[in-house]
Length: 354
Image (cartoon, rainbow, N blue to C red):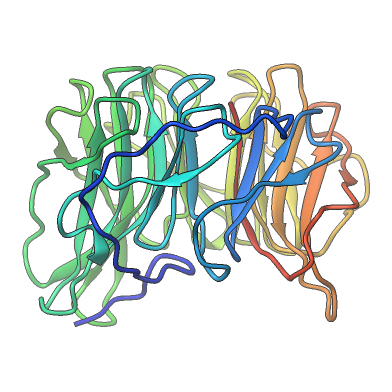
């Protein structure tokens, strides 16, 4: 029995026998800003998003990169279709990770995060096609992304089925993994949450009545987090994800959220829509400048100095490339970034500041 898969995810078969080798590339001036997406695209900027370069990687040209994270300034990982890419030189080169669980070829990971220089987590779904349900999974690394093992989590009760979509930590001990789950084939979609209070050693289910399609969860401090649902709905917690309060803030699908500090942040979504808040997400307003794109925005990230970078697809007919927007004033005004070095139509799914 199949479920609706994570956006754009497909399965590839990989081997799990060799250890990743550390390499260097002295020909690239790699900065700390990355964007990843379809067509095996890894973009990098060394000037806060004004200019970009396309980084090579060993995946097939039609690979879909779904998440990116770094454990420190040097070591990082990218999730993709049945693969995890690793870097040990700040992103100059990327190689296939091979220290993975034996069943990883049947897993599709949607998001990734690191909580210290050694420990990180990626979340997604396991579906071999042989079981009547699809099983949510969490993988864990304790060596900076060099190897990954499957974490022990509570099992769902049949006939529930679903997938994890997003993972976020309040600190190095407390974090949540959230996803979309379905009661039977074509049944009601609701939000499923697992929480850890011991750095990911154990996970427990947190009861939530929220329904809809989850796109993202993000902690902005030790107690406050936001989860983005379909229909312009945000659910917010101020007690470290024990309880959630629902708020409808838009009439469009919200895909991405980022905060520059505990007060000021933005959300982005379909048709180039952007909203900003300056009061911890209690109220949301449109930017001061006119809309700069009608493309679907997938993700956003923030520098502490008020620079925001939003990414997505360029959905104009006949166009190639992708969409990257930049705000230099805490989300009040935005501009399109041109001359992105992409020759095919690409949907950028995540953006990350290391």
